[in-house]
Image 1 (spheres, rainbow, N blue to C red):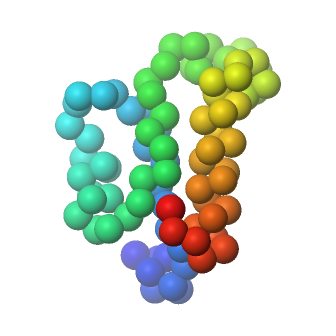
Image 2: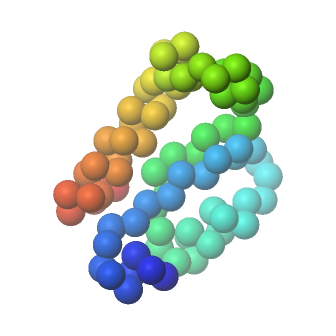
Length: 83
């Protein structure tokens, strides 16, 4: 609501996403026209990197690509582009 009040671009990243399970946050996004930039899967490896104070994007290419994609989508939305 706040981003709409101030007419700011908005996007959502769903964390700990489990494919095939009902996700109330995703439903809310669909109902309110909020773009979902990414669905970060519930991933034990990602959690392990975090718990060991390692940067996942530096540890594995797949995380670097995922987080780089999120940044690209957010940058595009912030500059007025369509996500």
